[in-house]
Image (cartoon, rainbow, N blue to C red; front, side, top):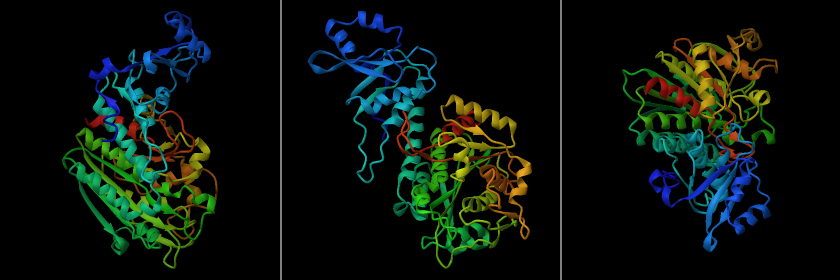
Length: 462
């Protein structure tokens, strides 16, 4: 566990350097309680308790005696990860919050997530070694479990496609399954053609064989929770090829798969009382004489025929076959996650993934969990009238349609055609990437929505 030594047990508090949260109004009293040298240091650095600012106060021998963390006017903190900037800014050592902060579990989690670095290729520096003592009353094991799951997700997304093709994604899923005593099965290559024809069609253009990864864990008699993640390990756009700029981040097009594996790690690690199934259609959308074409009509696993309006709308095709399989056993909860549309980013930006469901109770609970876990999500509607935008004159449905309107909504509507028996279903259209670093969110691959989903699922099946 990479974070175990970064979040120390509460018993280590006595020897740790205190972090003192101060508001602008408290600064006069704080300075009055300091010695002349430290007071001069505060004034020389212009520290006035502003939100987002911090200052280390020197002690004897050049050590840090305490750290002042600015809280502005003292109003409610919008982001419990705000203090996380200290994790990458402070020198190596042990630190503790002098007073238990509000939402202390999230503060501790943010510290760990800020400590994350992707070091596989030696291009990033590891954390400098600023360790945090777990605040009183916080479940340290739970925080560590969440941090490890997010790190797993980030690692998978950050890995270049040269080292993260369908086979490597399967290997990562297999490693996770073995760690938790889960069972992994797969269907791969030409064998997909009969049972999963759309996964086969999308993946057959690549020299790296497509596959459907199928993990099961837990009591078969327990409530069924199934996770489906888009595993397009690289997306050229197919014959409707992307421009060069559009391919730069396509290593992250398996971000849905990475996120469901992270969520699965949390579920299995917590030992929730459910039967978990994880389905990942892992493919590379490439260009060759075997590639599927615009205008082709594919017959899906469900039996619906799909006219190909655009080969760059391939993610919904592989998800459709996986969703159809998942739906056959009528799961209690069916979740799919995918880096599915640029339209979602246009609508809500990179930080706020939309989710879609017809279940009002689930929508309310997920929105509440997203807020409480500092894991933002926003509901968008399954607007029925937009089904007309993906109609086909020669098949049951078109995978893209001719209109450029409402692209994220029409993608969700497309997927809904392949879900009929599940008691409830929710689709998340995620970005899986942080373009500009913020506290707790280094630039690069990202987990989005999985902590909110875990909170919801744990509340139901703990």
